[in-house]
Length: 225
Image (tube, rainbow, N blue to C red; front, top):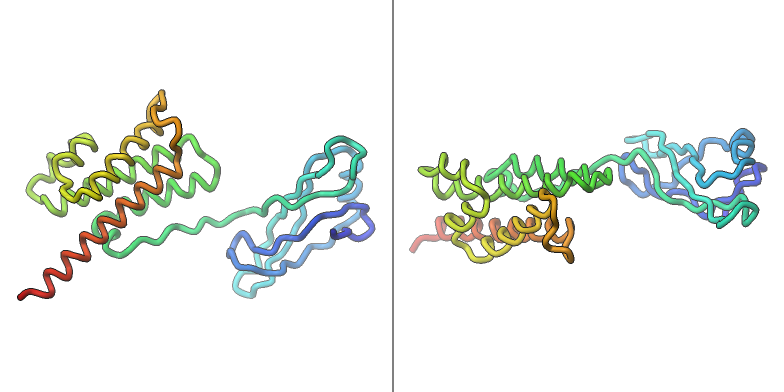
């Protein structure tokens, strides 16, 4: 437990990671003044404290957020527990170069959706993941069927999967990802025991099998009899 000077406030810990550069650090606490204590004379459920990242490559200021552990006023009155720090800098997911070449739009939309998820925009990030899946599958199918590009663009996603995806692992994962993606886009939810994490897992499985297929093609092409 850490006493904040002579303010009468106590915290359980200080942040050990900068939310801007995402490095493990021992941040510099900006002096706690009596004004903080005065502000907390009235019953409040939260406390924010200002810190500075000590890294010479970062040096940003950030807020550490604490929540009061008391269940009611007068109980452990000045004890706060660390919750999180802001602002948090989003770190995009890095995809294999093969996927980026097949569908750069997939990687862009997926990371936009992931950013929305980190901001707890849970009602829209699922639709974004569903859109990223459509770009991934259609761009993959266009790569293998360049003469059918206009037809593929206009097809419903499931029609595209059923007609053009021949690898069973890709087809099975993409199909189930589409099912869950539709749940994120429609009024009624069908797969009640599945959520966005399952959708992301299936998309990433589809990505994995696409990479495996592309790598196989590369070796077969480079190692002819």
